[in-house]
Image 1: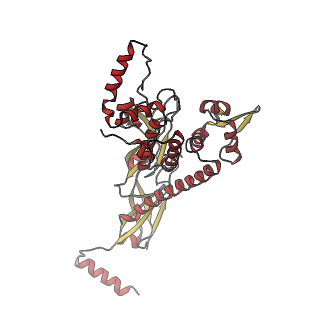
Image 2: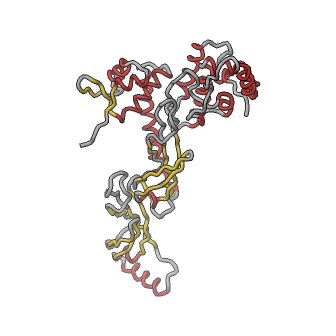
Image 3: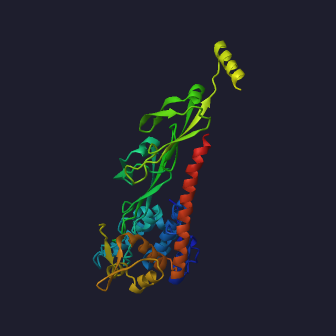
Length: 297
Length: 98
């Protein structure tokens, strides 16, 4: 665990006044605060450092302790204990100190080792909203097709959520109050879930619509007929018009993907016909095609 | 009929140690909406996170009201662009594997 130079983090001198510390903190907070940098993990990490530096340097007692021990911070607790033992005879223990805070996870090991992980400290009762958590859920296309429940473990807590059908790849949903716990009565943070929907099916998806390419033999394309095609709900029969051209598109209404949070509504399925020219023809087939060529007019 | 949950502005200001005039200024600039019932001001619960964000902008980051307006506009723009990137990425996937 390395010593952290809080003065360097805030870009200030060791003799900085409280006003200079406050100004430096605010200037950096305006640059890195998560409110101003949504979904930016680097900014979040930077802000935690700045917040920690401010937490120590803006609190006279913490700053005094930090300045006093500096690089010898690892022995700070031993020195403190010795001091307390000496004073014990003359006064009762205050019972104060820097007790473990709910938000300890937001602070570095160095901070927790020196100050016990409290965000509030003695005398300051600033309310802090808990940290926002982010996580990712990976789904297959078929899993995103149906509303289902899933249990997530976020920071050791199990959270059961309902994933509505039709969730999009890259979509972010917020579960309010399921982030980190607030400090000093501050509200909990939120949980942001990003969905990653993998598609290994034969369908392509865009919003609520599905797209598929179906091979069509030349005979059905020329003469028409009935074929069976796959949809996510099972197989459906489809009439093919005579003289169907290669690349013809057919729209099947309501056979696409569910519309997010609109139960019972579905997008369409667009089928593109890929007419296949037969190969490995027999002599008889070749002869018949030759006849067709002769009479094509 | 949908039930609206309201939070008293006086309670909010007491809990956050802020001045009521700040909330009034936010209302005047159109950043939040206040519902008045029997001469008392309330905000809808779904505006709470937004209001807390404005409080952090103003009191923690020392951003004035004009700054908050600008930041809010730019954050909305970032959000809309991020959404557009997501949509375009999904559309790109449609053609990538062809």
